Image (cartoon, rainbow, N blue to C red; front, side, top):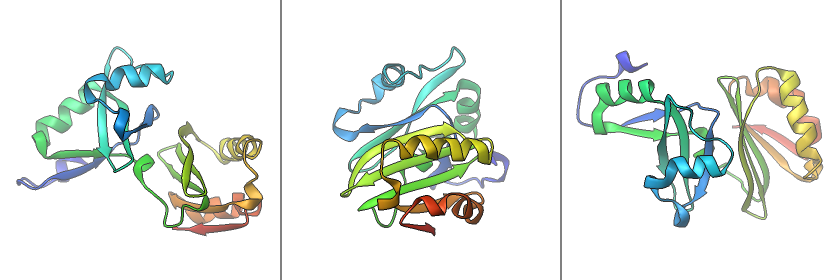
Length: 174
């Protein structure tokens, strides 16, 4: 929580767990047009939200719609020390033929790699195990999951492995 962050000059990593988050290829990313990118992807920021860059990797930048009030509180406490990130920026240890998932704050962050290339990156609501199973049933319609390794991070990873593991060649908790 913000109250627990000590004063200082060092950067502070702030992980944003937000449903309206997307990856953008780094060469196409322009922070000035972040809100337009979200809108073009079907998730325009609401009237009380704004777009924020959640970090950059070599290949991707992440953009999220955040409450203006939440952003104000973070900036008030941390100023320009805040470095935003999202689980969607994580890369699994093995990205050859891998489905990576991270379930946090009733959200499922999911990335699918085939041949080392990113095929899908999404954030979807997953309030219950029923939601999780439904999403993976739908995902199985687009990818032959039995050929993929599942790498699980986040909350209750062992329970997710038990629930979903049989759909995959191998399922591992990270």
